[in-house]
Length: 446
Image (cartoon, rainbow, N blue to C red; front, side, top):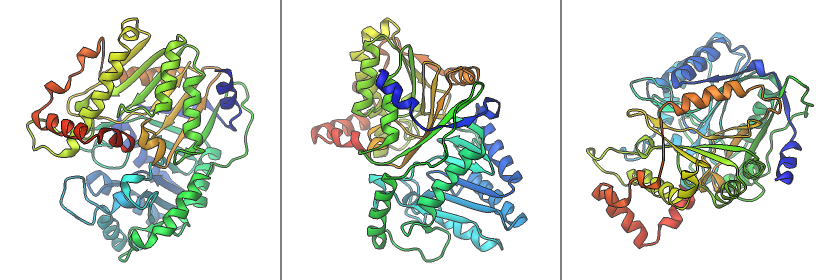
């Protein structure tokens, strides 16, 4: 426990004024703030997300970016999205050119271009994607796990709930932009998605392999600062792959150093072995553990039984089976309230929150889902907040309160449905998966 805390304390940090750190509580607030910051930008806009969708909200963001560039041709405007995700349609939809079509369309409409870059973390999407997060506008960082489309931005009648933090800090903004320019934008594996002729993924196979090796050694670079009284510290972290992944290492260290309480947010309950072990150890040494996870109906892959079934719709049930098993083996800890599991559900909306709070002293903002896929395959990042004086506690308690507003406490594993109560199509799919012993493989890539 002491060794883990020492490792966290040795991390280089950037000093942060707590008065320049703001929590947003809804997807609508996030959308409004993002558009407002883009409109007021003076010298740079860097947006990094899994995807920017060809829908009303995506077009609204693209329009704002291009208009900012036309007003001020000298402004830097760069968007980084996953290479594979940008060039396919939605899962289950007809084959198409994907979001790249709208990027080309917008590029042809405006005089001054912006850079929309496809970032291939692996040569196949199933084995790794760009899951880096952060929207840097001038000296402000808006950090969220959200991508850019109607549901994440609550453009219509549904939303996908995430976390949203606005941090005004030139050194943090510079470090995050420098990472993008040093490791991503000029790499030969990374290509513009708005051009008419794009290289094939197959032709980039060697470049992608070399790019991933480079990313595995990458870090956020900055001059470390001493955190004076009245300030908090921020340590930006990045990682990809299983080996020498500093983000993974320090996620484990956070749980390992907990003395009183741990709160974990995850949309997909499928902990990597190392997190599962640290959670078990924390409970054993008397730490109060709280896990907030989306109900299966709040999963972004959930399809209601009355609609046409697709194989992908089996995922939320697999996650619930994992959660039920975890709750069953921890039934005594649930009864004693040493372990609290909250299920989030709000009408037909979905849940996409990630992160941790440890002893009111450490907070992790991240897009990491705390699952094997994030642990081994995707390029992930996070901002570790060190707050020994508890200067941000009021804001984070308000955030937790807003999250818990639409949750129910699980009093027993029996509250979670078992396979016998699932729709017939789901039952058949899960039994088939188990029969061919594919469930172990699936857990490593989901």
